[in-house]
Image (cartoon, rainbow, N blue to C red; front, side, top):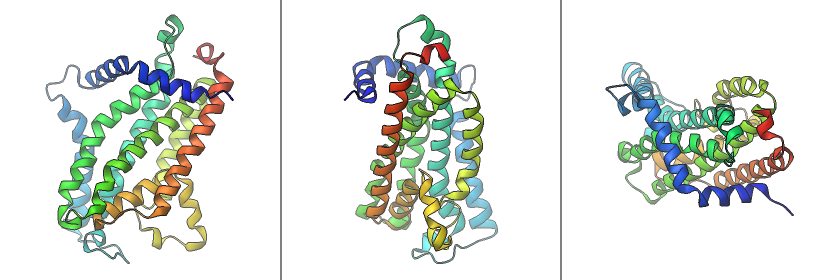
Length: 269
């Protein structure tokens, strides 16, 4: 059986030096012409999480009902753990989804593997957000006390990057075939946060409808980050199983999309 995705992954590994160059150029383009440089890249997510902490924990001192750990009971503290990975996911998927269209003129003139461009977009996004997520380990030390479970964060981050790449690449192909996909996915991403345990605890959602939350690919990583950072506990087996299921499902769908579009993709662009 032919697996185009496996071929693309081998190609990305073989061309990893070029991928690094493209990623650096992508990051350089974000800071080109600005004196602040990386400050303007990191400032928006940092300002957002600071606003959550100030408004919900300092000004209103709001609490989340049913939280076992004291840190998880503070609304701002709880929101930051889920919101920062969510912003990283949305940024990676949106940039990756449009990457093939942006690279269309280049792909039409050069026989480059299309996978380079969604991979570049996701890696560049990861370079921006991954350090911020890792910094949460130190920032949340009073909550998790460096219990063993907190070291699940790097594994969760790696799983999230893989999830973002598979989804972004799949959507990039679909967007090349049908431009309306970008608008539809943009709407879903704006609504998706309300169907994930980021703004509320999983236990607060009606039990009979809780399965709907698992249709959001970021539900499992969000629960994993919350367990690790707020309690220092290892994420439950259900978290890893759901993440693995999403990765497998997206890999199968992407493999099918690659097989169907291989001879037409450049023409669509």
